Image 1 (cartoon, rainbow, N blue to C red):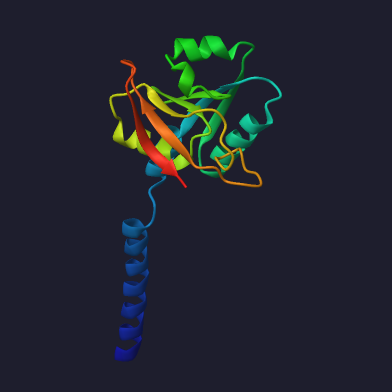
Image 2: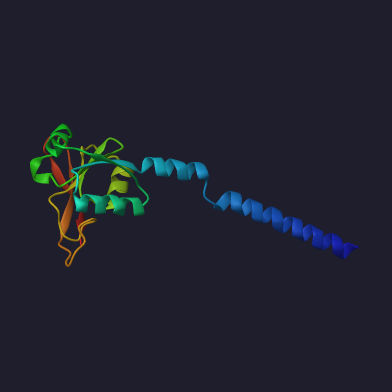
Length: 160
């Protein structure tokens, strides 16, 4: 009889331990929902721009929700968002009050939202080969630029 009580007690303790382990070490659905909400980005692009579509697809694979807005005049969006002409690219996005111009890597967008610097946003000027959405036969070096409203620019990240 004592052996049956011991085995039953052991099984109960194992089940309770597994439940506790799951509660402490497994992800919290509320946290996952908040993270996904934080990764919602709106992208403004022209119709038919394949590299813009590729960048959007890349962000989706990186866990972002991308709300694409087709616009007839991207220059108006860029002007409204105070993007300096030397930092312009083919599409403009917004996330959490920041501007993301061009083919910016997902890790730099996450860093921007996490650090919340005093800036308008970040940009990968032009369309460098090897940046997300611009994959091709080579990888050109490029910088991610952090820019503010006083015309100040600084290198936020370098690739490769």
